[in-house]
Length: 145
Length: 281
Image (cartoon, rainbow over all chains, first blue to last red; front, side, top):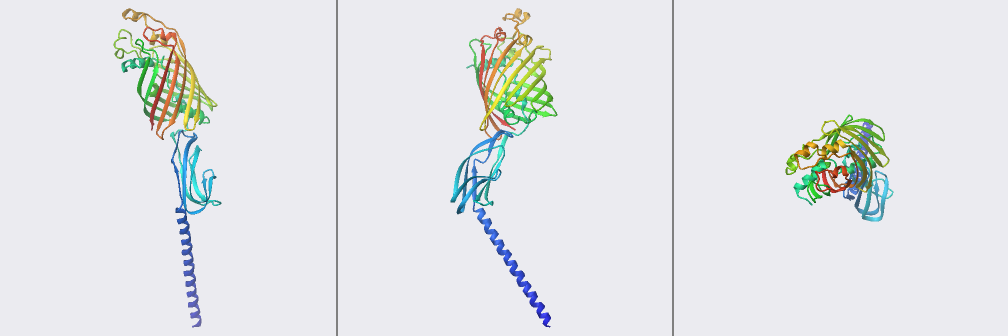
């Protein structure tokens, strides 16, 4: 009889432990959700959005303006995640703007990050597009005479 | 500036292929020079249509009338399949060209080409002025063109002969071009020489003895000639499908052409300035 009571107590304890663990996981989930909310509070946009070059493979040039905003005042950096280079950092700011001379043969991704962090708080892209998409040399255009 | 009818005459002169320099799609050359020099020289596939306007000065079939202005449609395109290719450049007024890429290396490409060329002097377009002359029909020029990609420069040599039996003539050309990209603007410049033998000149601007007997024109048998041609232009991608082009052209005109009695206004040079907008599919 005593043994049976002990077994019941152990089962109850296991149930409590299980419930506690589940509660901890739920709380952890809430912490994660809070991080997501923090990320969505960040805003990054670039205008104009697209760089057009004449031929595929040709370097494309575009004067763009980045605008970013975040609900929390902190140190933020605008990063070219394609080249992994920091474009500019702002100290103790909640928003910022930057005129930038984009020059690339490929589409580039950009992100807003907290300084010394690798987490992208917001992302945007400057796609590079071409009028003539063939990479082949159009030698035919030399039919002059 | 001239009336549209007079313009037609000027353009007929152009279709003779002897007075209005041929056009090129300069931006494509720029692309070839600046960005794809590492690529094998294979004709790119594309198709585009557009509209252009142009003004210029050149010889004319009427008196004191060397200026012209016109709007024109553009149908450009090329397609390559296993070395066989077809090219069409409406902007130049040149008809279609068929070819086969016989040889290619990193820097050189040799094509066998064939296409109609020249024409004009049809009576119904010239107020009956040429009614008593024989029609000048197109030549079917067959030959080769050798293109070299030497650093930022492109050279091209061409030698063609008429196989239609109309003119029985031979033409040759040598061209040197270079391109520069300034941000998204693609500039180009090129110079060239073109040779037309006496058979081509005789067929298109000559007056035979029979023609002289039955018309107001005096007999004329021109020799061969060499013209110098130069061109500068710029191409800009307005959007992913629209391309803006502007081109200025210059060429010398030889006495072999200008001494022909079919011209009432002659010049030693011809120039034009054209601007176009095309939609690329």
